Image (cartoon, rainbow, N blue to C red):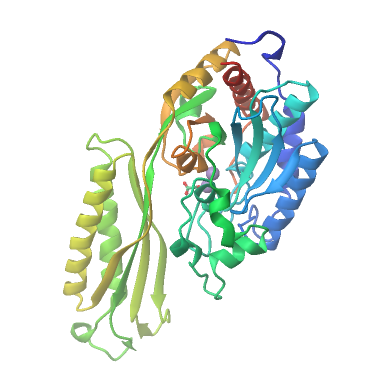
Length: 420
Ligand code: GLV
Ligand code: MN
Ligand code: MN
């Protein structure tokens, strides 16, 4: 139940919005909105955030996994931590809301706590997780993997095309990969993440607050076809070993099987081939090799296993048809589907209702740091509507009132959780 004077402290909607727009200006100018993890622009964003955290009076630190943390110590030693946050990195040509809306909401929530002198028994931590989006090292959710003990030495050895290891990149942004186990936390009693929905449901149904039930598992799968480079003008069609044709056939198969899996009643299923590389990539040369990376997502692990089996069979058939060889499928990463905490979802729903907001439950087809947090702590997510459900694109948009509503729900839930 609400605890008297502590309850219903509202965020400053205008300040939240202005901060979000300000950090949005820290983008690669020729490619709005781009602030990819580990780049100089990302470092500028981090510096901006660090300054805001300091100005707000938080105790600021960075953990071994490179997460930026602002802390408000609680009144009761050993009560544990209520954590709230998301990520400030973007995809290339992304938007101004994905991830960073949750970080700025956390900043604003922290400010409301400080300004109102609200005393929490728990420590409060406002977090910007490192590198949630896929990056040049080939791993997403780097910081949230680290904070939950899921950043393996094999992952730390992942290397970008220029030769830098992920461990070196983490060190470069202020983490301490040699002591990565220090980042692992066991004191988190509740984790909250506010995020734009990145889909069309809330807007379509005119619902103000989405209460997330589950977050899809994401499997990233690489297949490489190897054929033979030849002259594009003189090599007869029946003598070619064209790797790109096997790739094309495989992509079409992936589309068809994903369409089938999406409607068989086992929840959300999607698959995308977003990376395609052909070598030597020349107009007048028969392609020698062709690489694709699949991003497959499902609430059901069993369905992801079936998907990999089907794609394996299809790729082998395509390779045989076009007389090329096939390496893979190789699983590059595999995050398990996550269930959000029931009690926290009910708490968030009650807070929303008491704030006069409409809600519905929904699953997330996007990956989130909360998926990793849910492995070590009760974790919950609040979605707010975004324009036409568009995300990972510059047109991404959410209304100031929608963001403030989400932040108010999280603030209220933190206050009530602390009082239990
Ligand atoms: C994260 O943004 C994802 O790819 O779902
Ligand atoms: Mn994203
Ligand atoms: Mn995100």
